Length: 526
Image 1: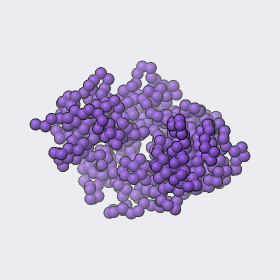
Image 2: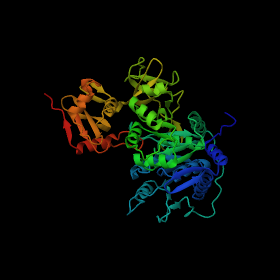
Image 3: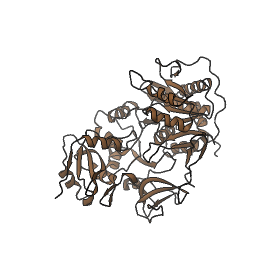
Image 4: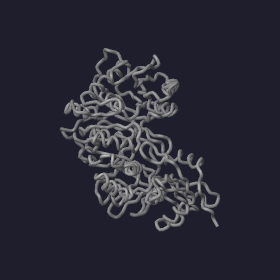
C-alpha cells in the first residue's frame, strides 16, 4: 500500500478533517458545516453510540435523507468501527424491518416522517418487529421516551459521553449497500474499509476533484453511486451541496447560488435540467458532469458539452462494486460506457456461454477482477454469495449489452424490461431514445402491454413538450425512419410526468399504474 494512502475510510476522513478544518464541507437547507465541525459532530455521535451500548462491528441502519446528518452519521459509524447500513429514508416499516433483520442491526438512525399525527409510526413498527433494536431519532422535537434524540446542535444527548475507542481495520466491513430490488429480492452488498479507502480517493484523483470543487449531491446517499460520488468529493477536499429531493428548479438554483462545479445524474436528470435552463440561471461554474443509470444519446451529450460547457464522464456499475467508466469524448459520443480491462467483462447468451463480439447479451463481470461479497443473513458474518450455476467465476448483471471490436462496452437496458412482441425482442431504451429526439416530446418511457394477439405491444408514455400535444400517428411517423416497423409504438399515453426513482431510472410499477389510470390512444389493426 502507498505510504500516503489511508488504510481505512475512518483514516481518510480524519485526514481530510485535519487538512482543512475551517473550510466548508457540507451544505443543506438547515446547516452549513466546516470540516472541523463535521469532525466534532461525528465524534459526538460516536460517543452516543458507545453510551447507548452499541459495540464496534454492530450494524446501524441509517434511514436519513440527503442532509448533513446523514454524512455525519456515516463518519461516526466508521470512526467508531460500526457498520453503516444505507437505507432509503422513505422505506416502509416492512422494508426497514427486513433490512434490520437481514443485517442483525443493533440500532436504527431514523429521520421522522412528515406524518403530523405520528411521525414515528414507521420506527415504532420496526421496533415492534425487531426486539432490542435501539432507535436514535434525528430531531430537535419531542419524541417517544424510549428513543434517544440526536441533532447537530447537540441537544438531547447525555452530557458526558465515553470515548469511542479504537477504530476499524482495513479488512473490516464499512458499509452495507441495500439494492433497489430491480433484479428481484433486495441484496445486501458489503463494502470494506481498505477497498473503499483505495477506490473512492482514487476516483477523486481520476476526476481531478479538489478543494475548489462544489459538488451537487442530488442522488440519494443511500444508493451506492450517490454515496460514492459524495465521499469522493469530500475526500477530495470539496464542498457538498445536498438536495433531499431533486427538481430541475432546485438543482439549477443550487448551481447558481452555490457555484456548483460538479453535477451528476441519469440521462433524465440532465434532460430535465436542460429543459428548464433559462437566463436566470448561471451554470458557467460547472466544469464536469458525471452520467450514470442509462444511455446518453449523442444529442444529449452535445447539449451537456455546449450548454453547460462541461466535460462528461460516463459511469456504469452497481453496488456490487462492478463497473466501467470513461471520460474519452469519442467513447461518450458513441454511446459507450468505456473500455473494460481485457478479460474483466464478457457478454453471454441465455445459456451463459460467451457470445461473439458485437452480439447483444447479458453483461457478466469477472469475480476475479470484481469480487462480490454479500452480508450473510442470520449470524452477522460476511461470506461470499452461494455459488451460481456454470460458471461460478462470473457475476451476471442482468443488463443487456455488447462489446465492439475496440473493446468498448455498450449497455442496452435490463433483460427483464425487454418487450416480447410475437417472439421479436424489443429494447425499450432504444425506443425511448428515439422518442426523446422528437421535438414534441419532453420525456418518455416505454413498456410492454399485454396483448392477446402478439403477446405484448409497445406502449410509449410521453410527457409532451410545452405547447405540443403528440398523437400516436404523429409519433409513429416521426419514428418510421429510425426504428423497424415492429418497434414502433402501438399505444400512446400522455402523462404530466414520467415516474422515476431517486436515481433517475423509470419506476416501472408506478408507470404501469399511471398508464392504467390514464387515457391511452391505441393503434387500430386492419
